[in-house]
Amino acid sequence: MKKRVVIAMSTDKNFIFPTLVCITSIMKNKSEQVSVLIYIMFSKNVTDKEKSEFLLLKNKYRNLEFVFLSIKEDDDSFYTGFIKSKASLYRLKLASLLSKENKCLYLDGDTIVSSDLFELFSKDINNYYIAAVRDLKLSKKAIIRPKLLKKVYFNTGVMLVNLSKIRKDNLEKKFHNLLMNNNKEKKLYFVDQDIINIACENKILPLHLKYNYMTHLLRIKVLSKIIYSKKNWDEAKKKPVITHYTFIQPWQKNALKSFYKKWWSYAKIVR
Ligand SMILES: [Mn+2]
Image 1 (cartoon, helix red, strand yellow):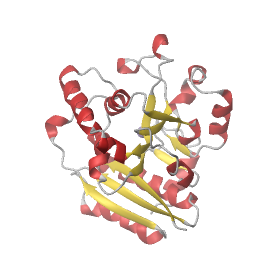
Image 2: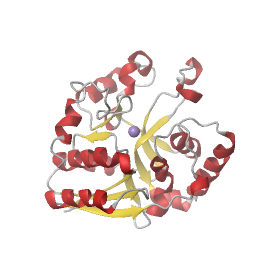
Image 3: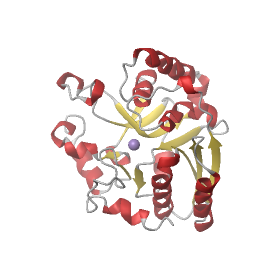
Image 4: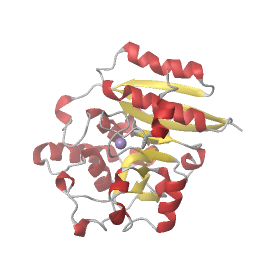
């Protein structure tokens, strides 16, 4: 039987290369019988030449398909708080953009996949809007505040998304209202992530840390132990399914190459 994994990623001009690196890692580590369909949401500054780089990957790997979506940004509906790019807000529109799909796995471009994704993709999330990994809740401007640390809060760089339920409950409207409200009040720091946490509250299935092993946690290991069990921490560290470069990104000038060996091993074979 054919197994299919549906993935969604968003990118602007600056994230093309990391996105190609992530896709390379997906294709190198998937099992033979799994086919991968990736929706790429491009911001409008991405050129045709840049888009064609994705087609080169399609020629290189079997069982890989792309759907390209060019996003027209409605400028006044996008507020840039601590978001590196407006493209990170496209995840709020997945349910309408991927109108033919019932479920997708959203991946940030600053991730590397080290195993087959079918098991994660197959998780039952019928009663939830998303499944995601817990993160430490920081205050506005990303300051650590003790009373916030135990608050249940999720990282949205890796999410299994129940698109049907989001459509059924018209959750995109709620996302939009929260975004509009924040354009005025500017209270949210991790804008898109905060919005998803608020709108999906109590309807988020927590995932094992290995599905979104975030590098910023290594900087605050002591605090991380508040929300992850030692067992989960050790398992994630030993064999992460998805590594998420949430601190310094591997391709940045000040990144220590030896720490980011895994990322560079895929970066070298992209082109
Ligand atoms: Mn990220």
